[in-house]
Image 1 (cartoon, rainbow, N blue to C red):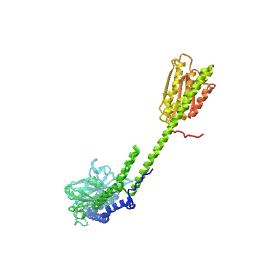
Image 2: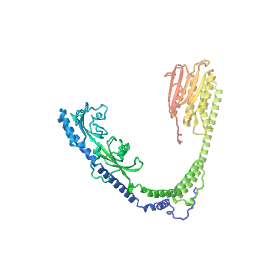
Image 3: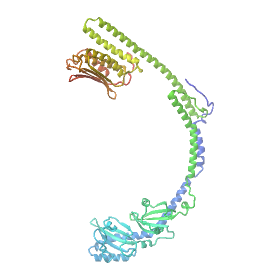
Image 4: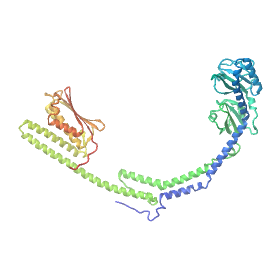
Length: 578
């Protein structure tokens, strides 16, 4: 069944296609962005920023050239003294004279000497030995294996602020002490730079631990002794430039570079005066205008896609969900404005929905007819079995032999068991499945009545888990329960029935596996002679094989136990033609 509605008429399909409309809206939105030179603006801004940073780095290199030269000269001198110290090591007087001559030859050095790992300084440019406290910084670095530059340490009584440079002295690959040079910081600051026409606002020289060695400009006025961790994190092989705030709150540009690798570093502070650094300019990001245009394009594209795609698809999805839940089919909204592709999709859904409703109606009618026929079959089979049972009952009453009556009664019990299965099947909502609990209760009702008739006072229990069985398993299980129960009653001890019991259970022992179990009182041992004797035991083994399980039988201290563990068939077997 189809219901075509040609709402769009003879319009051109291409002009109403979804790609054409989306491309049209996006083209209108992206047209202003195409007129802007975004790449050139960003490239110019980055070039200006990089050139300004390079110029500030070059000015910083010039501003610290004097201090760098002083430190490099002192480091080279210390390394030379560490090599020649072994020549005068055994003669303290000659050693001190050499250090004095070395100090007098270089005005940038106020003290020179040898700091041993243990003991006082006996070889130095001073006249008397110098005792170093065990807790002093010099004693802590006496055994260091690399150069150190320490700030604000005094080795004389002049009160001059000095920086101490140490160079390890080794002997047999072991550090025996340090060559110590004291560098007055005022002389280091006074060292002539290459060109001091454009000095920075502030200059700070510090070591790798952040201790300030030399300060100039506003840094000297502030009396800084330690630089922050944010500066130490920027130390590296190449200079770094970054923005920050001075202590007065003014915006500044900071340059951090390496003065002597691993020993000293420099940081300069510059004012933002021109170009992209100008504080009086309104600095707008170069990508602000393109970003605004891009945002406007997104908004236009969003509303266009929502109008043309999202809203119709959401409406179609809601109608599909309502159709799936209650099979109600509502009329679509605004199909005149739908693109051709979504209109075709809408028509496909409507046609499919009507076809599905028709197919489900036919299937439901067919299923109802089949259920009615199947219930009628089970009902007639049950009636026929009951008729057979009645005929057997008439034969029992006319029979004169007790053995014949007993055999006919056992046959009648088996027929009644089959009738019970078919009765439960046609009474069940699912004609292809039988409830195990109801089945066993109906089958065992006759067994328990027979038990009380023959053994007054005997106890009985029935425990069955809730699950269903297909007819191919329900029939052998019912017959198995009847045969096992009858055998158990026959083998019970003779007497009044005290301490006599019959327990039957069907339990789910694992996923997909069930176990039939019968426990009863018995005074007859299980022997190879009687284990397979009689028609009843042959039927029990046959029913166990039909269930797909294995029969187990044992005797345990007067208790007879029979169990069959079998898989639960979940799929209904296909009908076969014979």
